[in-house]
Amino acid sequence: MRRFNYLACLCIVLFLLSCSIKKREQQEEDHHLVLDSVVLHEKPTTEAPDSIYSFIKRFIDLDSIEAPNSGKLMIAGVLVPDLHDYDILTKKEFFVDRPNLEIFHKFSRDLINNKSKCGNYFLKTDKLQGVGLVAADYLPFIRNSTMWNGPSYYQINTPLFNTDASLAVVHVTLHCDGLCGGEEYVFLRKDEGKWGKLGEIVTVYD
Image (cartoon, rainbow, N blue to C red; front, side, top):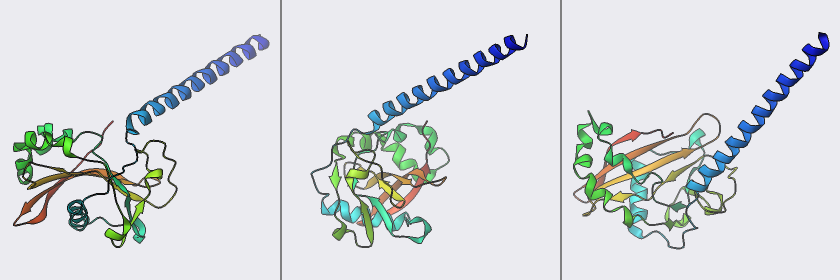
């Protein structure tokens, strides 16, 4: 009887171990699938135009972006379109009870029609004083990149403008170790030639 119990327990342990291995293999496979869907961009070969540099500087000030732990502010050294194609603009529920953002829902079609104009650009440090850049080779959305082991950084996606460049939406993500981090869409409007922040929507995607 003892031998039978021992064999039964051994079989159970082996079964659970087998299930655990299969689950881990599936998770790794899913992880690779996710990476395959994220790493879609080649390293940009076009430098951002001066208008984008000016916008990024203003955006950093308006959104009060600062380095965690009082270190040097670091941002991704390239701008690429939003992974989610700014589809937040099609979800009316995000704009409920946000009267300051109603204009974006009203002009969502105009904004979405301009997605093709969201280019891939690289940035230069000398044009963003006081800001450090994470090289493209270390960014997870650039093909053949390696792991970044440096300080926390912000990924600012290429801003989406409406036709007359009076409205803009920017997706920004904070990448850092531990439990910190987050992402949000920031909405801006230009009045009398100057960009102002209308609000933001924090989002979580499964």
